[in-house]
Length: 61
Image (tube, rainbow, N blue to C red; front, side):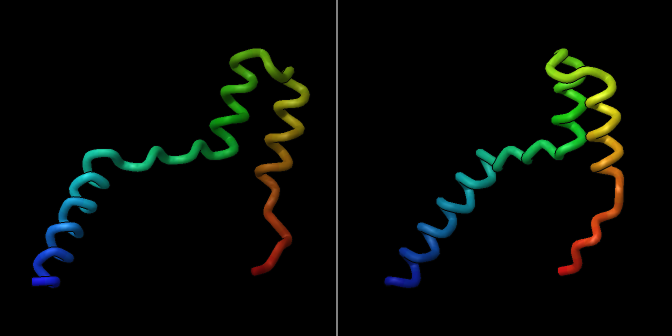
C-alpha cells in the first residue's frame, strides 16, 4: 500500500514538473548582448567584456 502511494505522489510530482519546466538561465553572452541593446553599456565596454568572456579559462577543476 505504501508503494502505491509513493508511486502516486511520484507521478504527480513528475507531471507537475513536466507542466512547469524550469526556465533556463540566460548565459553570459545573451545577457551582455541584451545590455548593449538596451543601452546599459557602450560598445567599448561590450567589446572588452566580450573579449574577456571569449578568452579560455585557466582554471582547472
